[in-house]
Length: 71
Image (cartoon, rainbow, N blue to C red):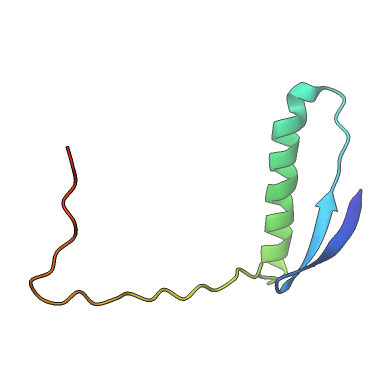
């Protein structure tokens, strides 16, 4: 069962549900489904959007150093 769960940041969010007879197969089934979805998306040139993050590095004036750590 595939359910539309809502709109995310630059994405459509779905829930994929499957029934397994034996709970011992839950993790492998979940992995198999995720890998198959990923493969099908790649085969159809559909990229999963990831939010972009900006990283700002602050300059340290010459002579300054990081605080010493206590051993």
